[in-house]
Length: 227
Image (tube, rainbow, N blue to C red; front, side, top):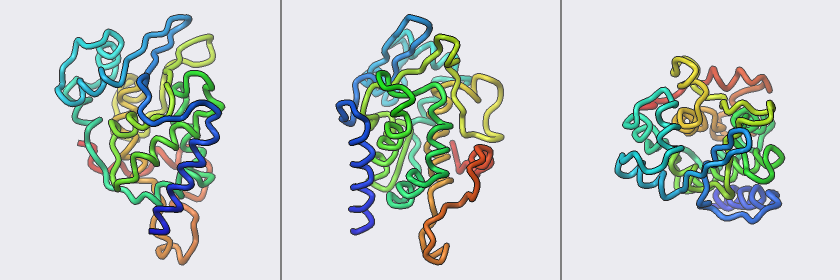
């Protein structure tokens, strides 16, 4: 009970520093930003696709699927797959130094629409922790818990629209290893693999499975049962 309360307080703190109105379930989980153009795929479009497999709902979503390196069925199956986690262990990892490095690495081109990279860590962390509250996470659940609208940026020669997909040895080709929907498919498995083990394993220490801030430490973590 105490662990869940502590994790809840940390999640609340993560939301409070977003400096924008924070509410889980934003209606704009992906705003595809290319140059000066912005196209929004709504949460309703994603929910319909993920629950029924129906496509041709939204032009940008269809293009995102086509450019993901996976079939629509594979994206649907991957994004709805659930992974068992411990709320307190996920929370401790995401607030650790290694966890912050992980979150920065995972928001390379995908971050809050208005505050961009300045609140990227807080925004993604809040969504993951909120989805972990029931002891499991999924891509669909993380997306549904985004506190604000997120954009995938390919603009101004600053952001190239590619993501660091946490899938060492599990993705093939640029599309599978850099696309947003492929990133979503692998994200919950990567969080599960990197969550901090119970404290008794470390003799009361709260340090994580990795001891370095080297980003490569995350890509080498095991990906458990993607499909």
